Length: 571
Image 1: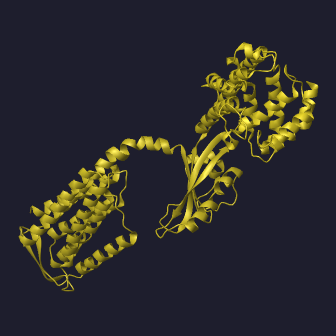
Image 2: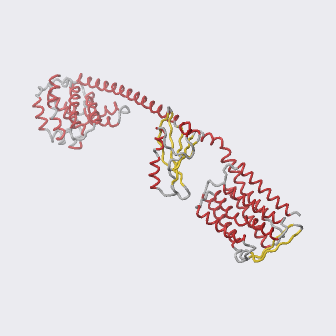
Image 3: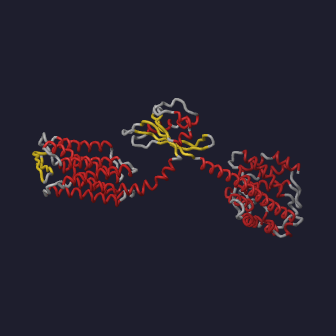
């Protein structure tokens, strides 16, 4: 009388586990529910066998009991794949279930065919009905498929343990131990006639092993974060509809963004919507184009650019809803409030603009001060040099006129480069600060010894510019200023000074400065010479093209004649 109570106890425990899973498993694993339903059905069959009073009842109950033996291996295998995060196609799942269905068909015909069992007898031991079977031709399919699923489970578990970091290895290892235990009990029962069935107990043990990862997953992955997830999704809007624009529903957040959704009825075709919602839905065309270019397994999604409704900013995505065959059936629109981020971006942009303006203003003031210092130094030079009064100021103006012509020419000079030369012009004779007063203030033509000393001023000027501008100006400007001061007395034929550079070896900024410097020297009165006329000066410069001056630059400089004559006549 004790065995039927054991079967009843196993049935009650399996039903209890089912309801525990139903109440506490927030993952709602379909495979887990199927497994427990199979166990409940099978344990119910074992209990009915134990209390059967005739052969027909026992055979019917035995068919129900074997339901678990046939289908539990494949669905437990599916559960292990789910725990391992290994996914197989729906076609493969259906095929495996169909194979097990064929085996169960053989089970259901056990009393009409000898394919599964050749002979079935029943007898009673202590009031409990016991069934004895003699295996038929196709009975080998039953243990073979059980062994195949056991091996497949081991392989899948080992693959996951070695390759997948997201798998809970402890829970999976426990499940494998329980599976091995169940197979071991089955083998022992086939070898040793115990006189009763341990299968219901084994089923309970198997389900207990499968509930351990469920409990662990719910405790640390989902349940602990449920409140956080609820809060996150309460600020995200969702709306779904099919490809015919039939409305399928939305959440409260989406209704707060688009109040007209409160008037829509599920199943109603969207024929009219507000301008804001229409702009969002218009993004579906991009998803449709992506769908026609995609593979069936692609996850279809397109972004929705930031837009405003009222005084709020929103951003989102449109997801394609596909069926099991990869066919696009509808769309899900997801939106989230992006107002805070956009406000931060606006404030950041405004701050950057103000900061840029402030930096530019301070930079301008620094440059102005720097330019005044440079001009002051230039005036100091001219106050010491009796022969070149006003030369530095005039050459700067000549360079401005020349630079305007160069901008309009086809020689390819950019504005920043020419502006740097104009700003560098007052520094071209800065090296004269290092020349003795006796030479600078000499009221006659320089002697050969004096001229040798004067020829040192470009080198001195280079060093002074480097020290004055270091860590203050941009590297490009410093380089231009250094070259202007250092090489403005070089000549294209290599006869200039201080380095005797030739042709393209002379930096172009120095070649430009040379034209302005020489022109002013020619048309200005000096203590040792009279001023030349504009025509005479231009004739000399024209003859010096290719030897003293750059030919291409000279052509442009000669076109400045009218502007230069006007400047010098007014000053």
